[in-house]
Length: 404
Image 1 (cartoon, rainbow, N blue to C red):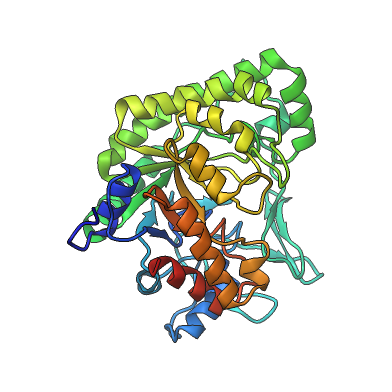
Image 2: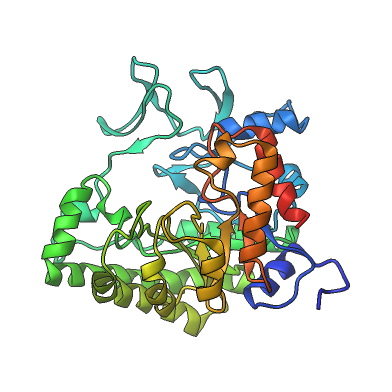
């Protein structure tokens, strides 16, 4: 039975996660760094909506060049959740002391004061640390590429190396910011709090091929590495829970297990190496908190989903419907009683970028009908809205959700 009253955003998300009736399908627009919008697309969207011209669009994630979605625009599209981010979202640069920055195409944006990329002489930018180039955005590109080496690439000596424990300053920030968001908004709050490094994909940054060789051939080392990482993850989870308590509703972990056509790895290897490590952390969450766990994993991951569910995942994002086997109706039939689907709206690789508003609306309604049957869906873009998405398609996407 649909509730007779209008629900708050937080109540709407909580009810959906508990498979209870809601007054409408919940929407995520900018609640995570994987359901956001490129600052280029956002600037055009603001203009199309007649939004504020007195303030610059703000880039809160300088790695992906994601815009901070202002509250008025979030409300225009009925967004029901908000992200609880650390002070430094990307490259270790804190999001404060904002300053203007001109992009090569003339778009002026705001960036953190400590973010100081240098022109590369070819129309792009490079970011240096200690004289080394740690990231670069080539001319004509819309993101920075990262070159920092993570533990999968550096193969640290586990007798001497320890992953980072969350700092007290970060805990204090999350404590005060979670209070602010909980008291002053009615949105559900999502916080990223996975292992110190993604256990499969992200950990190999700066040398992914080397990490894949290690992962496949050095079983004892990988087991020990995951043990060290999950030990610190459990410590961080306990500290984070002390700081934010039940003000946070959803914990997000990110790790890409799929390509466009198949999983990166076999189900057997996933179960042997990744499942036990991730399950340690997710078991702690379910035993000690009220949080629900969202996994962000792109790609064709249907063969892994039974193991992902066993791992302790409650919510699957982004539900990449363009990947092999990720048919919305089939996913709902086979896994809808065990997973909440978060995303799954419209193919962000073709329809959303190149289709008409009518095509965007039709595809979105079809996917919402399949994934949202009997509840269990929070609708969002399938990963971030890219720089080349026309504003009329963004409007069609979210308006078709809210009217479904």
